[in-house]
Length: 155
Image (cartoon, rainbow, N blue to C red; front, side):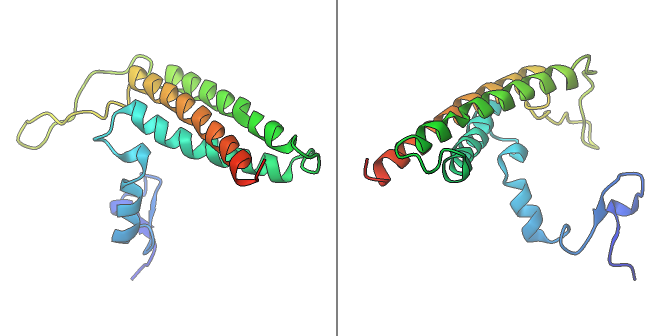
């Protein structure tokens, strides 16, 4: 008995099924990540992911940046990591424009012929909404990190 096998027994899929990846708790966790939740609008998914990225980007710049020992400057310079959020948002927009060009409009159907709704994120318009939400969420996350550094550090 092999412990690691190709996903669904198909070696051409390019995914291996292991005891970890096929565990119900891992599958449940992955299906609840914002990128895979199909019931949520693309812009709200982008806001959620952007908030996390924007908030967590400022910390390494503040604590490990070259101006970390200059009083009152490290937080401001660290929160300029918003530029990185803007670069990531630009990359998301470019990816959406390139990946979803000339898509066929064939929908998936169940065995009974009932059409399955397509994930709205998997279109050029949905990806543009996702990138816009990511920008708003990322900049808000950086702003929230800056506010917390000013309030919690007693300045």
